[in-house]
Image 1 (cartoon, rainbow, N blue to C red):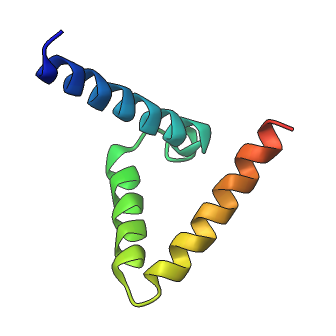
Image 2 (image 1 turned 90 degrees about the vertical axis):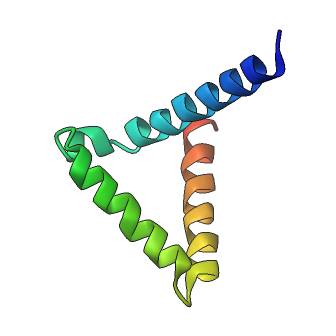
Length: 74
C-alpha cells in the first residue's frame, strides 16, 4: 500500500472517531443536527482554549472526558 493511502486511511479513521465523539456527547440530537450550531460550539471551545485560561480549561475538559469514559467502562 502506498504511503499516501496509509495516511488517508489514518485521517479517515481519525475523522470517524471524532464524529463518534460528537454523537456520543448527544450533540447531534441536542442541536437537531444543526451543523452551524455545532460549528459555533466548537469555535467557542477553541476560543476558550486559545484564551489566557486555555491550559486550565484543557485540564478540566480532559478530566471530565476521562471520567465519562471510565463511567461507561467500569
